[in-house]
Image 1 (tube, rainbow, N blue to C red):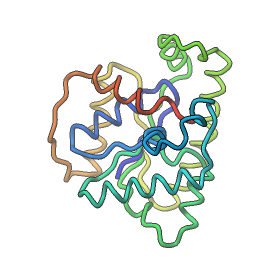
Image 2 (cartoon, rainbow, N blue to C red):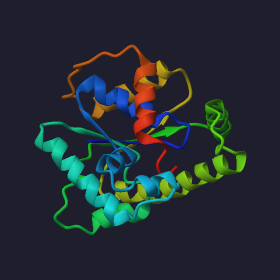
Image 3 (cartoon, rainbow, N blue to C red):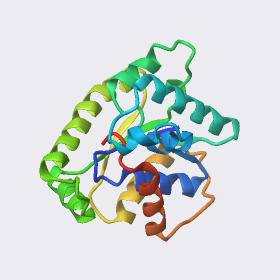
Length: 207
């Protein structure tokens, strides 16, 4: 199992989905799972967050379903914060942390993130909102990574600056380093299809 972290504008959802497609893995994001339940549409529409206990429970079930289908998983920015991580750590019966092969963090300078987000042209992407979202990610990742490393989970930082293919190649190389058993099942050269699909499913939940 791979976790891919990245700040808003880093392209983590696009890259994570591409990695999953290439190796026949299941790509799971919190936003995707919440939308599939059909129970939280109003909450998400209002930009609110679902409580951490519910998120952890739903994600655990989604991971279990994927594993039951014989699929390994790429997690999109999950766990999102310290609270979610601690909930899972407190579950003595959970095998979540034992199943993680690698956690990757996409590193992108703040000015580059702001430039990318501004290109999307969303009305709610004001300079203040963007800076706040990036700050929240930085606070969260600084609290999560020590907990993962405390469970002897490999954490690798990936240069997230460059073309789509350049960044993907770095992610792909690191994934194969830690999971040499990966077998390519799909080679998608149409990055735009994956990007649009990932963005529709994720909708930047919690970012």
